Structure formats: C-alpha cells, structure tokens
Amino acid sequence: MCGVFGYIGEKNAVDVCLSGLEQLEYRGYDSTGIAGVHQGTISFCKKAGKLSELKKVIQMQPLSLAIAHTRWATHGKVSDQNAHPQFDEKGSVALIHNGIIENYNVLKEELRTQGVRFASETDSEVIAQLIAKYYQGDFLEAFHKTLSRLKGIFALLAIHKNHPDEIVASALHCPLAIAINEQGTETILSSDPCTLIGDNYNVIFLQSGESAKIQKGKVSLYGKSLEQIDKKSTRIEGSSQKPSKGSFEHFMIKEIFEQPLTIQKASLNIEHRMAPTFELFRDASRVLFLGCGTSAHAGQIGTLFLEDFVGIPAISEIASEARYRVSLMEPTTLCIAMSQSGETADTLSALRAVQSHGCKTIAICNSLNSTLAREADTMIFLQAGPEISVCSTKAFTSQIATLALLGIRLGKERKTLSLKEEEQLLQALERIPSEVQCVLDQASWIEKMAQKYADFNNFFFMGRRYMFPTALESALKLKEISYVNANGYPAGELKHGPLALLDAQFPVIAFCANLATEEKIVSNLMEVKARGAPILAIAPHHLTSVKEIADDVIWVPDTLDPLAPFASTVVGQLFAYFFAKTRGCAIDQPRNLAKSVTVE
Ligand code: AGP
Image (tube, rainbow, N blue to C red; front, side, top):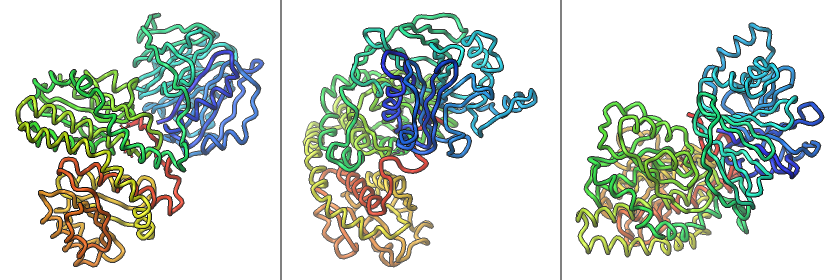
C-alpha cells in the first residue's frame, strides 16, 4: 500500500506535496518522491527511506503542478531506483502508483521484445513505459489505452513533459479523491482526504474503472468506457490542523492515553448511529465478522457479545481467508466488516465477495470517507479521531465499545437481556473510561515490567473466553512494534503442543480477568509454572491467588467478563509500547508495515 498525492494550483506544488506526503506517510514509508514539469522536462526528486530523507536532499524549482508518492514496497527492494515516480526510458512520462499490477511481467516482456529498456524492479514502471509507447500527442488517449492493458488494482497519477498543465489519474479498487477548493483555484488528488488541511473542498471519489484529466480550475471525468461523465461531489471541511503528538513522544502513546475520551465518544448519539443496522439484524440468521489484524480481534470479541447478549450465532473470519469460503454463505448471513482505515484491501475483497452472494453488510470504521464506508450497506462511524500510529490502539477499544453498545441494544430489543442485565452492563460500560484511566495511572509500573522482560525474545500471551482475543491483540501489539516472537493462544490450548516451547527463556503473559474461567486459568498458570517459564499475569484485584503463582502481576479493576478486554488490552498496549521503547524501536512506523494495507 502506498500513498499518492497531486496538486495543481497557485501555491508552490513542491511544498504542498511535501505536506501531503507527511499526512500520507502512514500508508508506507520505504521511499518518497515528487515530480513536476519545468521548462519542458520532468523535474523530480526521489529517495529511499522516510520523507525526512527526501527533505534533506530535495532542491526543486517552484512548480504549479506536481505529483508525489510515499511507498510501501511490493515489487522490488527499497532503493532510490525503485522509488516513485517511475518513468519511461526517455523520461517523458512520470507516474506514481498505489496498488499491484498483476500482469506486469507479461507487459514487461512484451515491451522488452520491442527494445524497451527498464530501469527498476517495480511493477509500476511498466505503466509509464506503456503510456510512452502509446503516446502520439494525446496524453489522455495514451493513458486510456494503457489502462485497458492493466490487470490488478491501482490508483495512478501521471504527468507528461509535453503537457505541463495536466495530471491524468485513474483508480481501480484503490482509493483516489479529487478535491477542488471552494474558490476553484486549487485541485488536490490524494489517496486519503486526511491530507486536506485548512480549506473546504468539494471532493469527488473516483470509482473503480474511472479516470480523470485535471487541469488548473478544471476536472474532466471519464467512465469505464472512457465516456465523459459527471459525478456529484462531497463537501469536506479540511482539517484545521495536522495531527500532532502534542507533548507525547510518539503518536502511539498519545493515542493510548486518548482512550478514556474516545471510549466515551463511542457512546455519543450511538442510538442514532446504530439505527440503520437494526433492520439488517432483524433479517439475519447469523453474523459473520470480517477483518484483519486488530480489527479481526475486535470482531472476535464482537462474536462473544452477540452470542452472550443477543443469542445470535456469530463467527469471526480473517478477511483474507473468508473470501474463499463465501460459496456456502446464505444471504441471511449479516456481515460486519471491521476496519479502522476502511481501505484494507483484504477486508474490501471479502466484503465484495459476501455482497456477491446477497449478504447485507455493515462497516464499523474510523474513516467516514473510506471505500469501505461507501461500499457497505450501512456503517457505524467510530469517531475516535485520526489514528496515526501504525499500531492500532484507540480504534480497537472504540470498536469493542461500539460492538458492546450494539449488542446490549439488540439484546434489549430481543429481550435476550433482562432489564437488570441491561442496566448492569450499561453501568459497567460507563465505568470503563475511568477503569482505563486507572490502568494509565499505572504506566510507570507497567514500564518497569516491560523493562524487566525486555531481554526476552519469545512470548506466549494466553487467555480464555474474552481474554483470548485480548491475548491475541496484545501479542500483535508487541510483535509489530518490537519485532519479537509473540503469539496469543487460548489458555486451554498450550498443553496441546505449545507448552513444549516453554522454559526459563520463554515468558507467558496471562490475561486472567474472566470470572467464569478463573479456576481454569489458575490451573493453566500452574502448568506453565511447572515448566519454569516466567509468568506476568494481568489479573483483577480480587484474584489474589495469582500472586502466589506468577512472577509479576499487573492488577486491573474488577468488571463484568464481557467488558474486561478494555482495561486488560490497555495493559497490553502499554507493555508493548514501553518494551519497544526500551529496545529503541521505531514505534509509530515499524519496519515493513504500514497503517493502511491497501494491497492483498
Ligand atoms: C494493528 O495494530 C495493525 N496495524 C494491523 O493489524 C491492522 O489492524 C490491520 O492492518 C487492519 O487495519 P484496518 O483496521 O485499517 O482494516
């Protein structure tokens, strides 16, 4: 997944593009680059490494038009040569690409037999070379001919040295927004409207197969058959300021500390925001949660909520696998797609697969203007605010808060929850922000624990029932920002093989906050202790017996089992953060990853 950005207007396009790349770096940060047309030639600068590396070397003339790119490598190593923009061999065309061209090898071979020389290992270069091959004076026509040859997914921007006032663009299953400011003096193209800072804009989202030619003050749009089309725009108020870390060292710790507020915000006007989903639930025979990574873990907790509160059968599937199982899907399966970004390609593909089988779909998402929000039948907006750190934290607790409220509301409607049960759950949910605050107040103790365990390179995280997805989520936090081998397991599963790995160098982090399974988790702790593995337990205050077994304990407030994931997950988030910090890891932008995975 990469970020593409373009600008035509009265400001210096190079400066605007650098600012746009800052907002898009979450999409990938292996390399960055900018290109424009200056005095009949393509002017450009591109560099491996984060945007800060490009800023050190860039020396470009002020331009009124430019395109820019931040890369997450799919084809070809991280290098200056493989950075975008990519060019044709004569340097007439500069192109930036988010996505994957699945038939690039065939096209590359075809061009090579015609004597075309390639400079990079990327799939994207093929596109620039094809445009140059088809170019006979009409840039848009050459671009359209090229589009007809491509297989895969893409958001493309391209410029040509003979057409200094034009950007051509197209999208196929990748997001691409075209934003015109109210005065009509500026046009911004972007993978994500989050780059719109300051002004208000009229935004057009290119649908799959559509293309555009952008000139100063003019946007021409074309449909899948290349016919000129009109599209309605959406008015978006540019964010007043760029996301900032404030007084925090990293976005991750800032977003962890935002959670008492964002969990509260999840309940703001929730009745109104959930209402469009009620009818979909009425017709549902079962529910399928779709998601990846952290969002998949939230979906797993969602299945427990729906089964416990509503009595409806629910399962959670990793989206990249679910798409191969839809043939048995009956139309009465209601699918809930979980996603912070709303742009995750695996989740979008699974959504489209279940929709092709007639299933209704709900998106629970933190981006109002995302592809997922547009393609699902309805959506519930998380309103957690921009989440910048690749490592998702506040979005997760907002997802499970939203799912808990949804489950309680449905349980009330179906009378599968008694009035007393409903009140108990809602009162306990109201206490969650302060319980999370209690965990945040223990940050220095949790930091000490992270430092104590910072030399270990292998961990098991374990838990039962609501603590199993909590263990999975906390293990993912640790592995993705500190690069250690950390895996979550159902606590009852360790004795079926994983226990063989345990020794004094293999700590187990045990999530014990599940009243219904306390005796079992204590037995599992004894099994682990008998193998000599260090134990760090995350346990509710009342479970004092844990002190006799675990090497260390981090205490969490007592609450109802379904709501225990909140405080326990925040412990896992803080542990991972301080562990990675102790090891000097990058934290907000971990190696090899990106915030929004827009490739499959
Ligand atoms: C979470 O910390 C990871 N960054 C990753 O697993 C993420 O949750 C996953 O890629 C799904 O992203 P989404 O919620 O934007 O769909």
